Length: 189
Image (cartoon, rainbow, N blue to C red):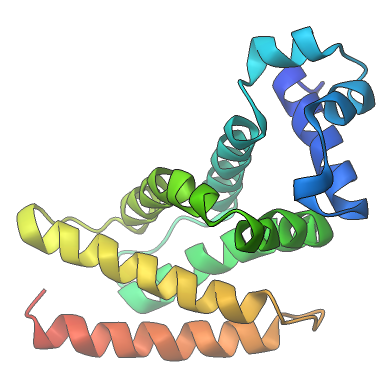
Protein backbone atom coordinates (compact mmCIF):
# COMPACT_ATOMS: atom_id res chain seq x y z
CA UNK A 1 0.00 0.00 0.00
CA UNK A 2 1.52 3.34 -1.03
CA UNK A 3 2.34 5.87 1.67
CA UNK A 4 -0.32 8.55 2.08
CA UNK A 5 0.47 12.16 1.32
CA UNK A 6 -0.29 14.66 4.09
CA UNK A 7 -3.40 15.76 2.19
CA UNK A 8 -4.60 12.14 2.02
CA UNK A 9 -3.78 11.66 5.71
CA UNK A 10 -5.89 14.70 6.59
CA UNK A 11 -8.76 13.43 4.43
CA UNK A 12 -8.57 9.99 6.01
CA UNK A 13 -8.73 11.57 9.48
CA UNK A 14 -11.69 13.72 8.44
CA UNK A 15 -13.58 10.76 7.00
CA UNK A 16 -12.98 8.73 10.18
CA UNK A 17 -14.39 11.58 12.26
CA UNK A 18 -17.33 12.05 9.88
CA UNK A 19 -18.11 8.34 10.24
CA UNK A 20 -18.71 8.86 13.95
CA UNK A 21 -20.57 12.16 14.04
CA UNK A 22 -22.26 14.78 11.93
CA UNK A 23 -19.88 16.56 9.56
CA UNK A 24 -21.07 19.96 10.69
CA UNK A 25 -19.91 19.05 14.24
CA UNK A 26 -16.41 18.02 13.11
CA UNK A 27 -13.90 20.82 13.65
CA UNK A 28 -10.67 21.60 11.84
CA UNK A 29 -8.91 21.17 15.19
CA UNK A 30 -10.27 17.63 15.56
CA UNK A 31 -9.27 16.75 12.01
CA UNK A 32 -5.74 18.08 12.54
CA UNK A 33 -5.39 16.23 15.84
CA UNK A 34 -6.69 12.95 14.35
CA UNK A 35 -4.16 13.35 11.50
CA UNK A 36 -1.36 14.00 14.01
CA UNK A 37 -0.90 17.58 12.86
CA UNK A 38 -1.37 21.06 14.23
CA UNK A 39 -4.09 23.34 12.92
CA UNK A 40 -1.33 25.41 11.31
CA UNK A 41 -0.13 22.29 9.46
CA UNK A 42 -3.72 21.61 8.34
CA UNK A 43 -3.97 25.18 7.04
CA UNK A 44 -0.90 24.62 4.85
CA UNK A 45 -2.98 22.17 2.82
CA UNK A 46 -6.60 23.25 3.24
CA UNK A 47 -8.10 26.65 3.90
CA UNK A 48 -11.12 25.20 5.69
CA UNK A 49 -13.42 22.16 5.76
CA UNK A 50 -15.03 23.02 2.42
CA UNK A 51 -11.61 23.09 0.82
CA UNK A 52 -11.15 19.57 2.20
CA UNK A 53 -14.54 18.58 0.72
CA UNK A 54 -13.20 19.77 -2.64
CA UNK A 55 -10.23 17.43 -2.25
CA UNK A 56 -12.65 14.62 -1.34
CA UNK A 57 -14.51 15.24 -4.63
CA UNK A 58 -11.17 15.10 -6.45
CA UNK A 59 -10.38 11.73 -4.83
CA UNK A 60 -13.83 10.39 -5.75
CA UNK A 61 -13.22 11.50 -9.34
CA UNK A 62 -9.88 9.70 -9.39
CA UNK A 63 -11.44 6.53 -7.98
CA UNK A 64 -14.24 6.76 -10.55
CA UNK A 65 -11.81 7.22 -13.43
CA UNK A 66 -9.27 4.62 -12.31
CA UNK A 67 -11.79 1.88 -11.57
CA UNK A 68 -13.68 2.28 -14.81
CA UNK A 69 -12.59 -0.19 -17.42
CA UNK A 70 -11.41 0.48 -20.93
CA UNK A 71 -14.51 0.31 -23.03
CA UNK A 72 -14.75 -1.42 -26.37
CA UNK A 73 -15.76 0.92 -29.22
CA UNK A 74 -19.03 -0.96 -29.76
CA UNK A 75 -20.12 -0.65 -26.11
CA UNK A 76 -23.35 1.32 -25.86
CA UNK A 77 -22.99 4.78 -24.36
CA UNK A 78 -25.62 3.97 -21.74
CA UNK A 79 -23.61 0.95 -20.54
CA UNK A 80 -20.41 2.98 -20.38
CA UNK A 81 -22.13 5.73 -18.38
CA UNK A 82 -23.72 3.14 -16.09
CA UNK A 83 -20.32 1.64 -15.26
CA UNK A 84 -18.71 5.04 -14.69
CA UNK A 85 -21.50 6.28 -12.43
CA UNK A 86 -21.46 3.02 -10.47
CA UNK A 87 -17.69 3.31 -9.99
CA UNK A 88 -18.34 6.67 -8.33
CA UNK A 89 -21.12 5.26 -6.14
CA UNK A 90 -18.83 2.34 -5.22
CA UNK A 91 -16.20 4.88 -4.09
CA UNK A 92 -18.82 6.72 -2.03
CA UNK A 93 -20.04 3.43 -0.59
CA UNK A 94 -16.54 2.45 0.58
CA UNK A 95 -16.77 5.29 3.12
CA UNK A 96 -20.56 5.23 3.34
CA UNK A 97 -21.05 6.65 6.85
CA UNK A 98 -18.61 9.50 6.25
CA UNK A 99 -20.09 10.19 2.81
CA UNK A 100 -23.60 10.30 4.28
CA UNK A 101 -22.44 12.61 7.06
CA UNK A 102 -20.86 15.06 4.61
CA UNK A 103 -23.71 14.98 2.10
CA UNK A 104 -26.41 15.34 4.76
CA UNK A 105 -24.58 18.34 6.24
CA UNK A 106 -25.67 20.31 3.19
CA UNK A 107 -29.19 20.38 4.67
CA UNK A 108 -27.76 22.33 7.60
CA UNK A 109 -25.70 24.65 5.39
CA UNK A 110 -27.33 24.90 1.94
CA UNK A 111 -24.78 27.53 0.91
CA UNK A 112 -22.16 24.76 0.96
CA UNK A 113 -24.11 23.04 -1.81
CA UNK A 114 -23.52 26.07 -4.01
CA UNK A 115 -19.81 25.88 -3.16
CA UNK A 116 -19.77 22.27 -4.41
CA UNK A 117 -21.36 23.02 -7.81
CA UNK A 118 -18.00 23.57 -9.55
CA UNK A 119 -16.81 20.21 -8.20
CA UNK A 120 -19.94 18.55 -9.56
CA UNK A 121 -19.38 20.19 -12.95
CA UNK A 122 -15.77 18.97 -13.04
CA UNK A 123 -16.91 15.46 -12.15
CA UNK A 124 -19.40 15.46 -15.03
CA UNK A 125 -16.66 16.70 -17.39
CA UNK A 126 -14.51 13.76 -16.28
CA UNK A 127 -17.38 11.38 -16.94
CA UNK A 128 -17.71 12.78 -20.47
CA UNK A 129 -13.97 12.31 -21.01
CA UNK A 130 -13.82 8.76 -19.58
CA UNK A 131 -16.90 7.78 -21.58
CA UNK A 132 -15.26 9.09 -24.75
CA UNK A 133 -18.15 11.44 -25.54
CA UNK A 134 -17.47 14.42 -27.76
CA UNK A 135 -19.79 17.39 -27.80
CA UNK A 136 -19.22 21.10 -28.22
CA UNK A 137 -21.17 24.30 -27.82
CA UNK A 138 -24.73 24.14 -26.57
CA UNK A 139 -24.81 20.34 -26.99
CA UNK A 140 -21.99 20.01 -24.47
CA UNK A 141 -23.89 22.22 -22.02
CA UNK A 142 -27.03 20.11 -22.45
CA UNK A 143 -25.11 16.84 -21.96
CA UNK A 144 -23.34 18.14 -18.83
CA UNK A 145 -26.63 19.39 -17.40
CA UNK A 146 -28.23 16.05 -18.16
CA UNK A 147 -25.42 14.13 -16.46
CA UNK A 148 -25.74 16.39 -13.40
CA UNK A 149 -29.46 15.62 -13.29
CA UNK A 150 -28.81 11.87 -13.57
CA UNK A 151 -26.18 11.95 -10.84
CA UNK A 152 -28.25 14.02 -8.41
CA UNK A 153 -31.40 11.94 -8.99
CA UNK A 154 -29.51 8.71 -8.37
CA UNK A 155 -27.62 10.25 -5.42
CA UNK A 156 -30.97 10.88 -3.73
CA UNK A 157 -31.75 7.16 -3.99
CA UNK A 158 -28.23 6.11 -2.93
CA UNK A 159 -28.57 8.16 0.27
CA UNK A 160 -31.33 5.78 1.39
CA UNK A 161 -30.14 2.55 -0.27
CA UNK A 162 -28.63 0.45 2.50
CA UNK A 163 -28.57 -2.77 0.49
CA UNK A 164 -25.12 -4.34 0.18
CA UNK A 165 -25.38 -4.54 -3.62
CA UNK A 166 -26.88 -1.04 -4.09
CA UNK A 167 -29.73 -2.69 -6.00
CA UNK A 168 -32.13 0.25 -5.78
CA UNK A 169 -29.39 2.66 -6.81
CA UNK A 170 -28.51 0.56 -9.86
CA UNK A 171 -32.17 0.18 -10.86
CA UNK A 172 -32.80 3.94 -10.71
CA UNK A 173 -29.54 4.67 -12.53
CA UNK A 174 -30.49 2.24 -15.32
CA UNK A 175 -33.98 3.74 -15.64
CA UNK A 176 -32.72 7.33 -15.53
CA UNK A 177 -30.04 6.67 -18.15
CA UNK A 178 -32.70 5.12 -20.40
CA UNK A 179 -34.84 8.26 -19.99
CA UNK A 180 -31.84 10.51 -20.64
CA UNK A 181 -31.02 8.51 -23.77
CA UNK A 182 -34.56 8.96 -25.07
CA UNK A 183 -34.38 12.68 -24.34
CA UNK A 184 -31.00 13.07 -26.07
CA UNK A 185 -32.29 11.24 -29.16
CA UNK A 186 -35.29 13.59 -29.15
CA UNK A 187 -32.85 16.54 -29.15
CA UNK A 188 -30.73 14.85 -31.84
CA UNK A 189 -27.61 14.82 -29.63
